[in-house]
Length: 211
Image (tube, rainbow, N blue to C red; front, side, top):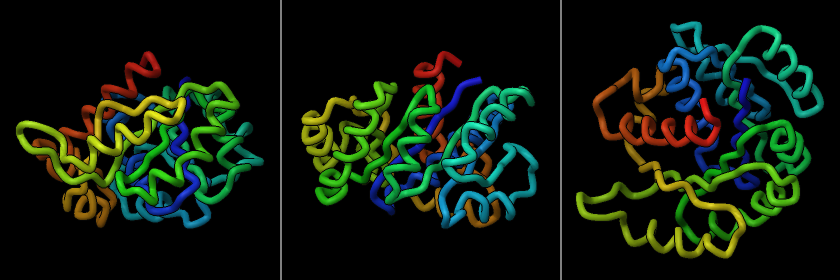
């Protein structure tokens, strides 16, 4: 069993959206997936309750119970656990990251978001856990290149000791539309650009975790 934690000290980075979409993408790849919602806002849980499909499975929990949740998930034969961690909580993030095989740190490309990422990168560096920064909510690329703000964000993030994922996720209406009735973009419009980007991010995660 492999475990991915999505952590961000700043709210509004799209952490829950990425957690949901990667969990569904893994499920569509025939893996047994558990989504763990440790965010007090419980947005992932609200999405799951609107969902018609039973998979991926979801459980709510907190950092103090996370080790037990993971042990139980391993006993039940899950292939992948995706943890949507609580924002603004370094303790919860530290617990989640410390129990994970891989950490993704989502960030929007705006300067205030980039400034706020330092605490998360220091945390994963201290724990020596594998991690990547994932740029999210970006302006869509053109056929020729990424938008300047994304290129500049990649350059600004080189000051940290955590690599930036090659795949950037764009701000697209399909993400909001899909979540309304408990779906992900691959289920809402499997041939759309949003689904293609999530699939590329999933392929990156498969490589990171050797799934």
